[in-house]
Amino acid sequence: MHIVSLAGGIGGARFLRGLRAADPAATITVIGNTGDDITLFGLRVCPDLDTVMYTLGDGIDEEQGWGRAKESHVVKEELAAYGVEPQWFGLGDRDLATHIVRSQMLEAGYPLSQITEALTTRWQPGVRLLPMSDDRCETHVVIEDEHGRRAVHFQEWWVRLRASVPAQSFALVGVDTARPAPGVLEAIEEADVVILPPSNPVVSIGTILQVPGIRDALLPKTVVGVSPIIGGAPVRGMADACLTAIGVKTTAQAVLELYGSDLIDGWLVAEEDARVALDGVRVVARPILMHDVAAAADIARTTLDLAQELAR
Ligand code: FO1
Image (cartoon, rainbow, N blue to C red; front, side, top):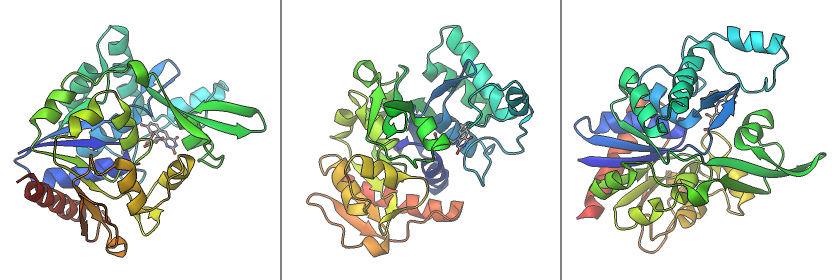
């Protein structure tokens, strides 16, 4: 079976680990969010691609959900000693090697999709990882604080501000001229099922859906999503701050409506959200907390069974 899964960061990567376990024989193509990407110290950092690559390649710092296991921060300390900013974004020594390889390949003219393929050759994640686009397309956040109304990079809002300053709006800079990366539309076309894991519906899944051509390519496909919201709260991260910023309630119902019944065919929700309903969507209520790989695999199995049932 050919599966396509969109994915953001931690929640998406953990779900994918379960999906791979749920159907080891399936070919899985992951379309990764690159809206979080940032250039720091002359290096291009792709947090969501790296989180998927490290998680599925068994190199992730499991507790943090991002960055490398067994990491050290000597370079970070040295940069701080020079007073170099930003010091709020911690790049570990092992992680830096990934950004150096990626940055020198970008400098040599390779597209991000080929670079990601090269990096995953080492990590063997067991899925094909594609960036949503090879074109630079970054999420910026409009905020209003003592410095007035301005846009900051998503990472500054997410990491330095911890989303403590309300986002007035999000701007996906470059999205108008961004094209799906090579292979993205073909993978969607060939997919038997498409899965939307419980990634951030605004700045991860929502970002990927904004790349011209991707959402339209998904409409004819059987798409099953897993709610990132349980009982009115995000499982992890700050999806509530993101949803509020775009005027959407933090509920499984509201996220389903945000995605739209033209896109979603099946929707997995937690048992406390069993009343969720939308015409044209099959809603299945079951435990959806991924507290370990086995739980993630069980949830993934349900999404695949539901997708196959709906595809008939
Ligand atoms: N998140 C933090 O909260 N603090 C950090 O210092 C930080 C550094 C970092 C470095 C590389 C990387 O790939 C991710 C990093 N993240 C950090 C997480 C990152 O902000 C999020 O993973 C995504 O952007 C949101 O999904």
